[in-house]
Image 1 (cartoon, helix red, strand yellow):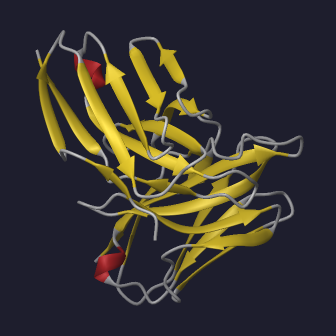
Image 2 (tube, rainbow over the protein chains, first blue to last red):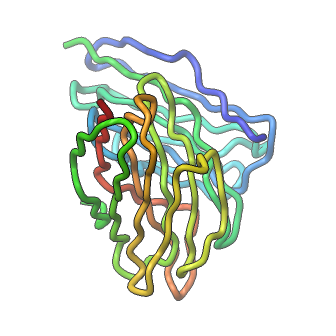
Length: 112
Length: 116
């Protein structure tokens, strides 16, 4: 089945630093999405990407849909303590029957 | 607030019991998805319903079942519960009568199930 690879499992950065995470797949997806999950809460959609090569920003977050359609990256600039959480990538295919395939997530820690 | 509601927030029960988790999707969303998240595990897709019909199945055990009602709310039934069923269960919704984007799933706050 389809699998998304996110590594490393955990990242530790200093407040104010930029951080980049990527997500790779052996399969092509038509949509890439990035979610953030706080402890004990549901994942929250950060950015959705629909076109190969697309670069989209949401505040300090920037994500890109890879040209091959098999990868995506998320960049967080000038990190702050509330950026702590688990970041999931997800790939999707078009249509009402579509389900998302999720990566295992990267746990981000931000040191003050 | 995603607009997706789930009840109860917490559920503690014993092995062998049966429980029902409830989800109300965002207003107008036709698709409902159920996920299981255990410690050290990512989001495991269980099942999808679209406008009352089952559309996709993931790693859902035979002891688990779900349905979506005419008002579009959904219930996930877990029976013969085992210790390993302890997890967070999330519902997500997407897609409206006027079209997508179907891939943008919005998650509820989850139900934390503890089986003792």
